[in-house]
Each structure stands twice: as structure tokens, then as C-alpha cells.
Length: 139
Image 1 (cartoon, rainbow, N blue to C red):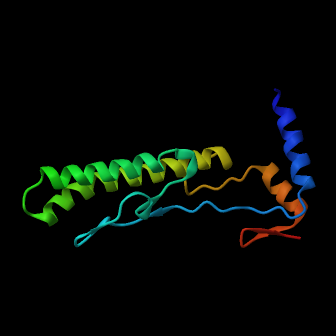
Image 2: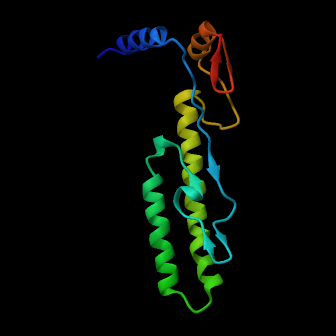
Image 3: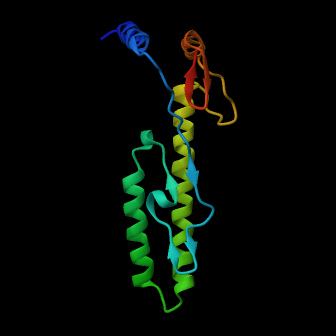
């Protein structure tokens, strides 16, 4: 189907919505995953953007790598947990950054996370309904 069909359909849908809203996407990454004998895994440590399609795989990898670190390690629990934490932190930060880059490219058409050149059509669309405040469009 031609792209203009989707734009028209989306515009009609938005115009028919009585109270449009915006849902923010927030990124969460902890600075460490191990706290003594307690370990954060999966989304307790990294909330990844949906478009990465990686949250379940990251949680599974965390569990698997924790199991391997404990099984294959020595009697020093702290050392085994550090061996688990370093690569899993790197993977989590990489996936978080990847999600930000993909989101910026699709929404703002930029690759630099610090740069925010919003697509002019989005500004006009929100402006038609009011201003964006606290994730709500205020008339």
C-alpha cells in the first residue's frame, strides 16, 4: 500500500480521538547488578525499549550466565558474581544505547542521542491539539 494511504489513515484516526495522549519511553539502566549476595537480573537491572525486542533474551542470558558463574566458579562468591556482572552490564548498556539510537532514528531522524530535531509534522500534529505537558496533550 502506498505511504500516503497510511498518513491519511493515521491523521483520520488521530482526529477522531477525543483526547490524544503521548506515552513516554523511559530508559533504565543500573550502575551495578550485584549488591553483596543479591543480584538484579532482567528488567530489574535494565528496562529496554520495546523495539529492541531483547528484554526476554537479556533476562534469559542473565539467568544463564549467573548459573554458569556460580557453577563454574570457585568458593569465592563475590569473585564469581563479579565475573557474572561485568559482561552482563556491558550487554545491558549496549542494548540500552541501541534502543536509544533506533528510537532517535525513527522518531527524530537523528543518530546522535544529544540531538533532538523533531520531525516538523509531529510538531504540527501536536500543535493542532494543544501543548504537550506531563505526557498529555493539553488543549
